[in-house]
Image (tube, helix red, strand yellow):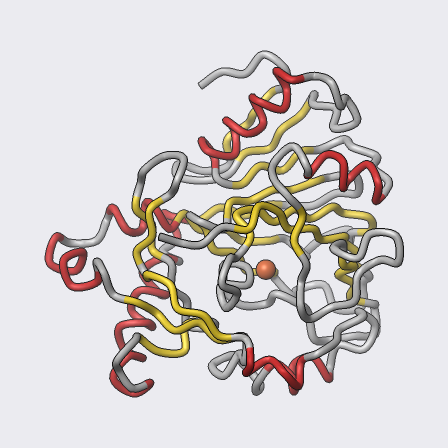
Length: 285
Ligand SMILES: [Fe+2]
């Protein structure tokens, strides 16, 4: 699809585009907001470059995609409590979001969209990987699709299968970012179908990750883990992925209903600061 209000440069065969020429301060450009919503549906993740947004302008832009959501495990800005800083200082080793996941699937209504605005980026490294979970579903065999359609996953915020321990252990090593509430992470649990249907496109996508899907409903963790791990690994096949590079003034928006992402932690000794805001709470079906 071609766009009239900005340029879109695809990042890979299945997912991702850089957007240039859009001005997110242009509140009344209805055509641009409509085309940006179309571009998210087409590319699933769009990295809009060349912006210079205050938190208020970031908030105003995101409202064109849906109602802002709260994140339970980080303190927000005083004026905009839904907006959370994502910071890794040069002396830190641990990074936020450093494993494959879709955002907050342990909530009853996870946000359809996540937006991340780059304030300070390392000269190299600190990219984010994304995968297209709709393409991953479509490329499964008919037998595998039959096996998993209708299966319900139990999603937990506890990060029990993350590297280096649970959420509290992980967050204890993140010293600069205003993390909070991680000792209560196990209380955040929801059940959703592991094959979900996108409400706007009608397309099915996988909705399952080794990090957040604790087990399958009516099954033990031990019984569930091989299938969860296989589906996780299938989704991150290189052909379904793209790599987004960051620069200050870039607002990246992705659709959590048909993607997963992974923040690459390869910039030790350098500082990275982002501002995160999610939007459009929606019950997966
Ligand atoms: Fe994330």
